[in-house]
Length: 63
Image 1 (cartoon, rainbow, N blue to C red):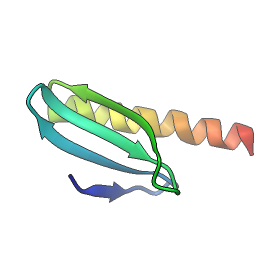
Image 2: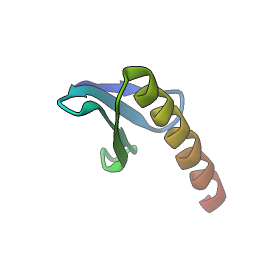
Image 3: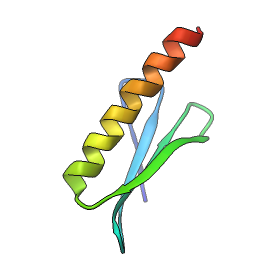
């Protein structure tokens, strides 16, 4: 599993799993802030993008 960087302060990983595609999102400290499993890679990518948007929005609200 390789972490990919985004334009936001978050990174994510996608990995093929027995039950589909597992994903995780990490904050700047390397802590997992969201994770899940989707049936397809495209669904997992969409879930990652949605979760990053939500996390970025929450980070702006708490700043």
